[in-house]
Image (cartoon, rainbow, N blue to C red; front, side):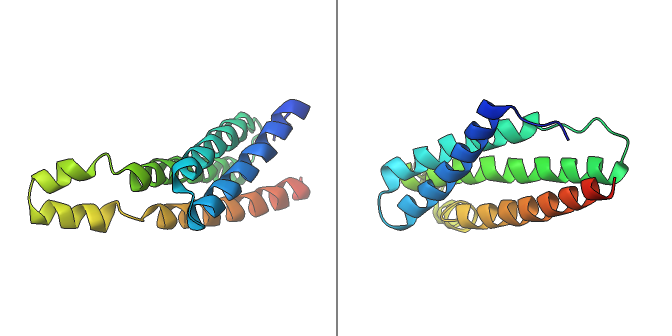
Length: 138
């Protein structure tokens, strides 16, 4: 795995801390600022994590890196859903089309950032653990 330099590593850790702080702020009631703190954390974390490339020939690590990219997509989706959950920008478009669409909004968008965040976290934990284990074998 390509190592991050000192500043990239600092930005990586700050992004992770901002993600945790944003979710904590959102859960405890300051949702207006929390969604943007979380989104900034996701941007920093995912951008630095995508810089950690693997140029070796181990197929297992390459597969795990692709799975890790799926986790990053889920983090970005969580950020978009938490912003939508705060400001409800799409809600008027769903309500305008009738009751069925309003129910679809509630079913597919409202508070589902928790599910996507959980999926992303599980993927990241699994791939990080497996990649470090595979790199230890080499």
